[in-house]
Length: 262
Image 1 (cartoon, helix red, strand yellow):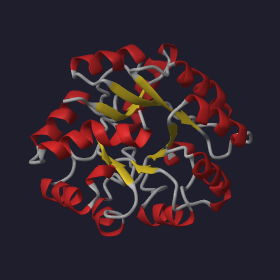
Image 2 (cartoon, rainbow, N blue to C red):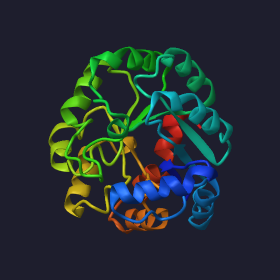
Image 3 (cartoon, rainbow, N blue to C red):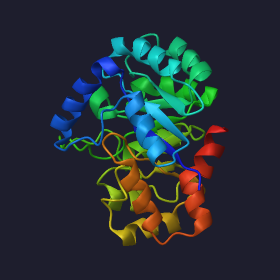
Image 4 (spheres, one colour):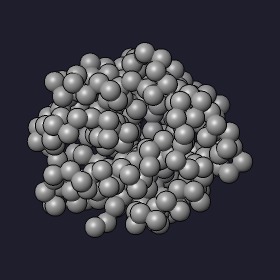
């Protein structure tokens, strides 16, 4: 069965160890591997993953262009870059044009980028993204760093979806990390895509099954959250669930293939 990982993170070799050390300090847990291109490719080959969406988030506006230049250079049959865009980057309009031509979407990490997803000051960015058809993958819910702040909760997401009904919004971590009760009540069943990254192994199985039953199965993607998540474990956990084979195929491969038209 083909597998595409819709949520991974990589850094250039020269800063990968520093990134790994920082993530382990912030998340208070060991990373599964050094988050380099070679490190990801190794685990992909070990687990028969054909492609991975890769992201590296700009925590400051001045990092946007250099990060994207690097991500664009990695675009290949194996790697599908989701570019970075800091919401307060002044040249965002021209950068969106570059992103449209050189990548498959944008990854936002509202906590690390210090913004709220429903801040109307950044709505012009969403407006152009919607017009260009650029998907957005957003860290939703709480963060493992446990600051207690929620920059993309269900109410905030719904505000964005109401304002931009045609925007291609992927709510990472089953729509909101450790907010799954609220997500089930407010977002599941709505016109939103979600991924399984850093989520299903934390959730009660009964709730996972409810999510799969209530939500459009065609709008659920497999994601590992490498290097925070272990690709092998996340795949095995998903396969261990009582899911129809056709639906498992959709989650692991077919849905994201159709979504990105690849």
